[in-house]
Image (cartoon, rainbow, N blue to C red; front, top):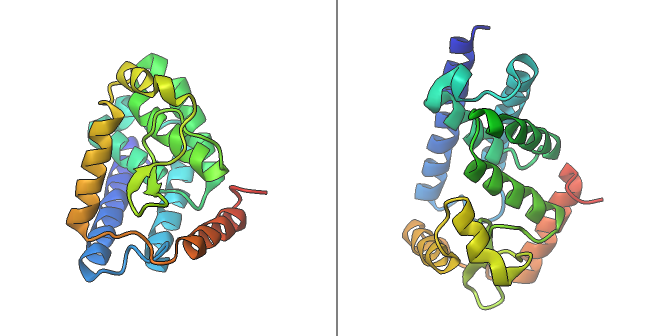
Length: 199
C-alpha cells in the first residue's frame, strides 16, 4: 500500500471508532463496563495499526500528515486490549519525537495509560477513574508533589483544571460513578489479566 492508502485507512478507522463511541454514548450503553462492540472496533483498528507499524514504523506527520498521524495516535490510545501494540507504539513514538514526527504530549498520555493498566502510578495525571467518593479523579500518580511541574513541562494545565474539565465532560455525557465499585474493580482486574496487562 502507498502512504496515501495507509493514511486513508487509518483516518477511516479512527472515524469509525469515534462514530461508534458517539452512538453508544447517545444510547446510554457505553459506560457499563467495556462495551463488546467498542472493544471489537478497538481490536480491529489495533490490528490495522500493527500492520502499519510493520510497513511504515511510526505513522507520523512526515509520512501521513497531521490528520493521518492524529488518527494513528487515536487508534493507538484506544488499543487497550492489545498491550503489545500499545507498548510497541510508545517505543516508536519515543524514537520519533526527536525527529519531530511525534509529540511528547501524546507520548505522555500513552505512557500514563500503559502505567495505569499495568497497575503502576502514572507520571502526568492524564488517566482518570471513579474514586471512592464517586468523583472522577486522576488514577494514582507518582511523586504527586511535583505533578503540576511535570505537566507544565509537556504543555498540560494544572491538574485542578483537568479534574474540573473531566468531571464536566463526564457529566455532559451522562456518566455516573458505578453503583458497585468493588464489582467494577474486580471486572477490570479480570479484564486486565485476560488481555495481558497483569500476570
